[in-house]
Amino acid sequence: MKHKNNRKRYIYRRDGGLCHFCSKELLYKQISLDHYLPKSQGGPHDIFNLVCSCKGCNKNKKSSVPEDYKEVMLELFKKACKDGQVTSLGIKKKDLLLLIYDVYRVEIIGEYTVFQSHIHRFYVKDNRICKIVRVETKIEDREW
Image (cartoon, rainbow, N blue to C red; front, side):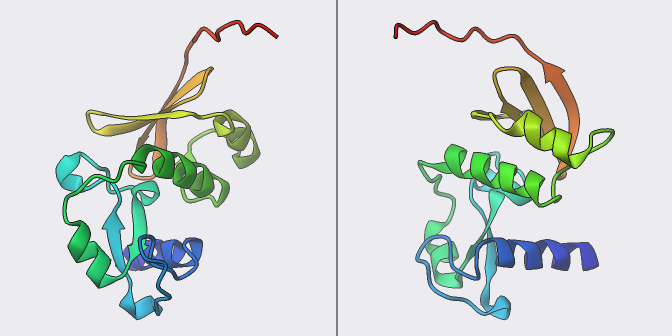
């Protein structure tokens, strides 16, 4: 139970005590945690997919998928890593921050949320990076 309250407190502070959808100021006891990408649509229960919501916005959103869910998840993943809320065994926080700096893509693959940069793919489950795979992606040559 304590773990759940710590997560809720972190999300409340991270979101500045505001509803993600209508920007209404909320007291801690008023917030509802909303899965930005709904669980019914494959959204994970990880911290980077949870946002503060007032009860009205959470009820109105239902199972709709926000158009910007990938951008929001990318931003919240990077923030959670910076804040030490997403962990990885064997990698120091400062090294992890360098690795995730240029993450630009997110996909749900099976039980994992996968974040990808041009060099690495991060497999995340339960707020932990379970696996990091080095990938080779071709960066297009640009004419200057």
